[in-house]
Image 1 (cartoon, rainbow, N blue to C red):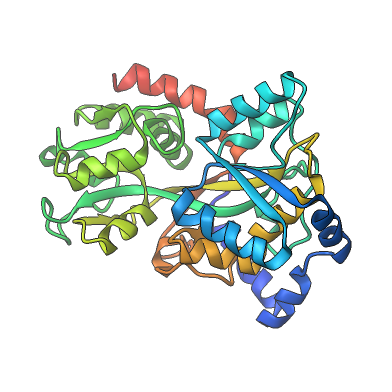
Image 2 (tube, rainbow, N blue to C red):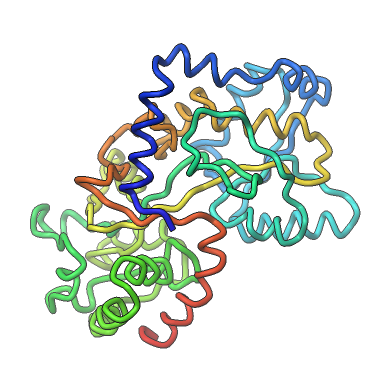
Amino acid sequence: MLHAKGLFATIAMTILLIGTPALIESARAADQTLIDAAKKEGEVNWYTSQIINQFVVPAKTLFEKKYGVRVNYIRADASDLVLRISNEARAGRVMADTYDGTATAPGLKKEGLAMKWQPTSHLPKDYFDTEGYWVATNLYVLTPGFNTETIKPGTEPKTLQDLLDPKWRGKMAWAATPNSSAAAGFIGMVLKDMGEDKGMTYLRALAKQNIAGVNGSARQVLDQVIAGEYAIGLQIFNHHTIISAKQGAPSAWIAMDPAMAVFSVAGVTQGAPHPNAGKLLVDFLASPEGQTIFRDAGYIPVDPNVPPTDPKLRPDGKTFRAVFATPEELDAAIPQWAKIYDQVFR
């Protein structure tokens, strides 16, 4: 698992080596042979976990305008995408060309349904699968969020130890599902940062705070916090609080040290009906142009040259530190972290 210090040192060096934006764009221009092959195929089937109106539609519009290749999309959560792609493959008809998500790649790898291919890119090497199957497209940074009407800004808990203050007992919530943006992910972050012994001691103390387990997503937890049902939501996406605040909601996030940062990645499906168009779409998502779409949609791009709309959202390893996890690391660890949740918190 990567820590921000090493990862962002790599990013800083990458910026120095790449140089000007013009050179970056030149280095990232898709190969004309690939473009021609994709245009010949004419369409691409994108199985995505991204939000449709927020990101998928803008990306589809610009990709179609740029390359003249039609984008068809299916939107579902990562686990549902794996199930759908697997079922279609078993029925003898692979439909997906491109997939994305935080937990999609490991399942498809196990099923032999992930193509071993990566785009040529200036992105830091830590944003590529070491086995050669995917490239990261955006970061999800998981932190506590709070209701700014319930808690006066400046008085919110700022450290993990602050969460143990009795005044927060019964006022916090997190998602109870077995994934990184839920209690299991928070547990993993604590254990990775503190170590097994100190981490478990902390978690047992935290269990006394009677944190509510919500049977829903991190977004639903934040929505309940905004509605005033809880004062604090743990392990929510920090960029969601910014999006909600811009819409007038009493929403803010806490740069708690550390946070957890996970990758949303994109890859090409093995046996894809339009493999070249699939590759071109992945290339586009990782390109400076694609990264700009992520930024404009309120997401956190992985490209060090494309800062999020609020630069504070992305950990810099100094003022804001994070523990990083790849999809494969999460796939291996989440079951154990979920087991600890059942044993300690339920």
